[in-house]
Each structure stands twice: as structure tokens, then as C-alpha cells.
Length: 349
Ligand code: AMP
Ligand code: MG
Image 1 (cartoon, protein in one colour):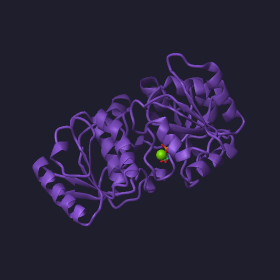
Image 2: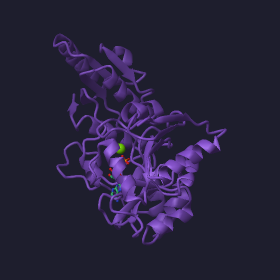
Image 3: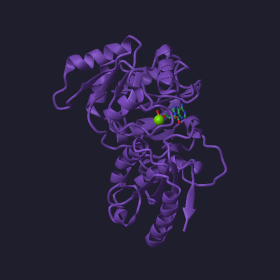
Image 4: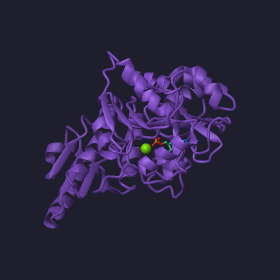
């Protein structure tokens, strides 16, 4: 299949292109599209055949549920059993935006879209291209991140083309994703509500609106020994091809440790990479040293992480060491993804 890539300027959106993309979805095809978090691989959420195609194109296990994207609040009532007050309050506070809510699904949502669950994940993105596209597509677009399973989520159209070129009908290129990390997921079918995936909408922000909100222990702990609760969370997502280890401790000790390991790697003829910050990157003797930006700018770290992981893959880096980016708020989302990419391999120095 030829994948048509079309550039969309969000200031001057070409309605006929958006309409063409929507028509592909209504005809049961697949279109990758930009959102403020990462690029999504969209299909008709209410068409079981479309969801099957999404799993095939991604190479993703079909028990890993998809997020249904809507463009307006009125669309919600058709796909859920009821809209609890908690959902109304969160929608008011954070939609459109990087928050996904888990709710009881109605009968119109096929099990193929929800990985066989009775619940459905719903998000209303803020990206204007995403909004127009969802409307043109009929209002309900199921979309996981637009990467091949096991690769980092794509933050630009070029990365979508690398992973899915030839496998889907169209890619809408809206430039770089503004945030660069997937949405926060909160489960509203349990009391108190529970965060299943951390993101830009933090636990503290949710608590300000809802009062009590739990966080799944397994999201941040290196060795909690429990299986994660969100279905998709058991899979080793976001993994670079190289072996990634996070090194935690005072920055001098971290640099000394990592440089020691890098020398060893070089002696073994392994190509090396480092994930560091603007403040520290020059102190590393790696083949591919990369800075995520300023150490205390969690949003910059979030935005740069997946790009760097992909660059390591493109350069066939075999041995990767990363500094740790612990902290409150968005840093928790960053560390959650970094820990997964590292298969939870952390060394304290
Ligand atoms: P992605 O689309 O790649 O950002 O991943 C979507 C993730 O949302 C899945 O891997 C699940 O972890 C989560 N998810 C989607 N639907 C549900 C649901 N009904 N219940 C719990 N988690 C869900
Ligand atoms: Mg994903």
C-alpha cells in the first residue's frame, strides 16, 4: 500500500485534505495524525474491523486496549454507560488536553477496540488538526501511538513514516508534537479513582479537582514485585534496541561511574550512548552523547526523550547509560517512561 503523507498547516488548514483523511476512516482505513501528546494511529473506534487493522499495522497484541478520541463533550454519552460526576469535573478542568479517562463502555463500542474489556478509555485532544480530523472521521477515532509495537512513541510524522510507511493509507503531518509524552490515564470506574499512567496532568492536579486519587505502585517503583493494573502496562514499551541502564546518585559519582562503563564498552567495540542534561553532557566520553535539555526543565526532558531513544536506534548504539531525572510532577511521567525503556535497570552509585 502507498502511504500518502500530507503536510497540514494548523493556521491554514486545508479542509479538503482533512475531509479526505476523514473519509479514509469512515471507509474503514487507517490514518496517522498529530496530537499534542504524540502521533496517533487512527481508525474508526466503532468499527471492529478498523481496530483489528490497527493492531495488525502496529504489530500490537490485541488484548492491549485502544484510546477512543473524541472532539466534543456531546460525543461522550454515546460510548459510555453513564458519565459520572468525576468525569464531568475532570473534563471541565483538563479537556481538551492530555488526560485519558477510563469509563464503563456502552454497547456501541466493540470489544475489539477495548481489548475485550467492559471499560473504554476516552480522550479529547487539544491539537487543532486532531480535532478537525476526528470530526471529519465521524467523531470517534480509536488511536494508540503511531509506532510499531516496542518502538518509542513517535513525536513527528517522519518517525511515523519510518515505522508505518506502506502499512496505512495516510499520515497527516502537523509538525512536532508539543508535549512528546503520552496522556495521563485515570481509571474512574474504581473508587477512589486511580492513575494508571502518569503524564502531564499530574496526580496533584487531579487531586485538586477530585480529592483522593490513588496511584498504581508499579508505575514508579523499580522493584515493587507487582504486576501493573493497566492492561497495556505489562508490555515492555518504549524500548531502544541498545541496552539501557539508568544511573542514580550525586552527579560527580554518576559521571565517574558512567565514564568507567563507557570505556569498558569501547574496549569491547560496542557503540555507546549517553542521555544527559545541558549541564553535564560535555563530561561524558560516549560515541553518541545526547542532552535532553536543562536538568530542571521537566517539560523539555519529556519532549526530547523519545527523539533521543530513536536517534540511538538509528545510529545502532548498543550500550546506553542515562542520568536519572527524578522529581515531582511531570518528572514522574518522564521517569515512568525511562524506567520502562530501561526494563527497570537502575544502578545507585
Ligand atoms: P497507547 O494508545 O499506546 O497510548 O496505549 C493505550 C493504553 O491505554 C493501553 O496500553 C492501556 O494501558 C490503556 N488503556 C486503554 N484502554 C483501557 C481500559 N479500558 N482500561 C485500562 N487501561 C486502558
Ligand atoms: Mg503506545
